[in-house]
Length: 203
Length: 230
Image 1 (cartoon, rainbow over the protein chains, first blue to last red):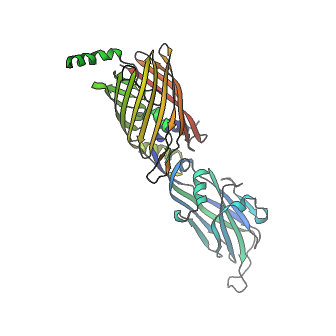
Image 2: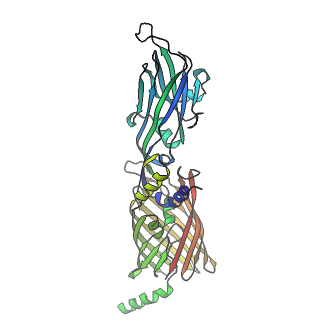
């Protein structure tokens, strides 16, 4: 058995009386989303594990930010990009999941929109930055209660019009990249209710 | 008159209890007249029913604490009043421990400081039986309060069955928002009280939910106390 859980259980008596400020930052995750056709929506699903230290009897979420970079390497196509948050998913941290729109599982329809449909121009990248002030209720709830959340990027490649100076044909498959996906949270934890644990310590 | 009182003070130690005046997770409605070194309470008696005490267990877990207790007997009636101040000094140690084990945690600051107070009324009809009720309030970063009834039932040869049942009280903060997880609480255990050695083993229902713990919840924790009364 790992030493930490045993130590934690025995020190829970004193930790349960404490008020704890916890800052967590998930390790950056990159994911490639191969696009095999244009004008067709493709979903790329990434799993992000939320550390246990940021979950539990949370009193207050002081800061919550989700960051990512959507890279469109195509030279001749713009990207229609939408980012969704789901509390269900099939990807794992080791195994992201990519599927065409037609084969999207039912939970994709139930997913919350984090970034509404945005255009990422050819050869450019879009920085996704969802800071605390704009965090919606679902993101706040998901990060502090669920051990794993799924970010689903919905991508459609739109070729440029023939009038555009950069008009051309991109060779397929084309690999889009959702990079540096990081969840940062600062929470105030309190076991407020564990009076029995304080009593068992003699406090 | 003064001489008679002084004689009483000298006589009282011969009636003194062994043990550190702790039941399971609550105080025991007993007087504390002999110095005791114990996990849940180590104490030095002072005149007039007072005692200076600390929870050694909490001190070992880096929650430094010091308290004052007053107790009196009048026939079978027992009265206890106590207060304590606790200051957590282990913030750095726990921070280093957690961050060493979980690299995604960039900060883990645990704070605890504040007073707590308790009051007990008990009846000891004789033979080692004790019936009591305790009210306790903790004023740490978040306040909490409990009312617990307790029974000590002697089983013979220094062994006792101890039971506690009560409630964590619903409290609200300054904005009127409810704090904590009020609800029923209880514990059960066995206490051995010898002439010097005291040992308690039991379990308490605490209703903790905490993802850091394997299983995600800790409804029941063990209660342990070991003491030597001098």
